[in-house]
Length: 181
Image 1 (cartoon, rainbow, N blue to C red):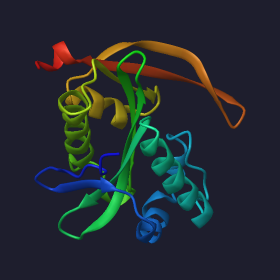
Image 2: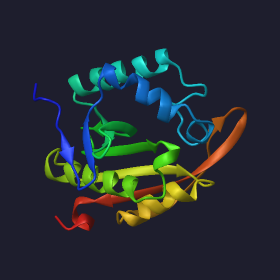
Image 3: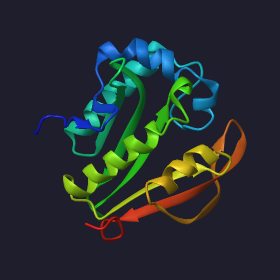
Image 4: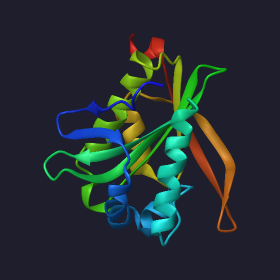
């Protein structure tokens, strides 16, 4: 098995998540705003949730099905969010998902992270397509997807049932050809 990759951008390091990141996961991920927009992040977000997420990421990486990156801000050397890529080897595509701590939003950091993961997906994982969904009431996430050059494919009406309420999502994609590789 290859070692987990470390990706860099001018302001960020995207690296494997470690148990030592649990305090930062709790500090930055324990947010109602995040839990309302990310399906697998409960609120409150507990130490057990963080450890389970780290273990799931490592299991998925070992099986060739997943990359779960810590988003680390270089200037403070601390996890401020996460970005993951679920691989479908049969169809040579991946779905990305992400979250960012509230104190670090609206600074272009997530766009920077998503661009780097998309490039990694095409250059190194050799994917043909990368896609993502965001709730229709989450314009910030939708803006990130647009900023990285993804194309809106459509709306999936009532796609998820969240706390008894049906929520729709917009789905975005970019193919290797559209990315210009």
